[in-house]
Length: 111
Image (cartoon, rainbow, N blue to C red):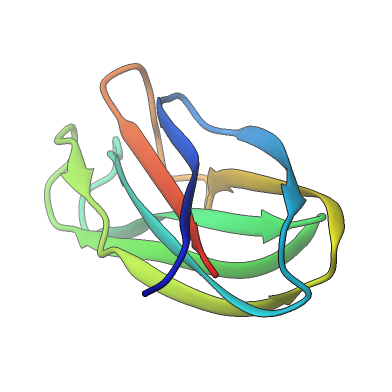
């Protein structure tokens, strides 16, 4: 069975970052979920994820309606870690993505 470490479990708004110590040296999987909204209809919105300043994945959804908080499609992101301290950041994927205190974000690390 996998070891699962919850790194982020909090309300918005984006962007924000967390620092963590990696207990693995090799392939790992991050799970990302959350919500966002837009003031512009018919546009893609989403949550980008960076590891040590490098984009590693995103969770997105196409927003048909404006002004409605929507859950993005959750994703599993496979990457490699080295032992030691790392910074994980969540940020909007584009200028039309809006988040506030009504949005929630979750990232877990699966070893």
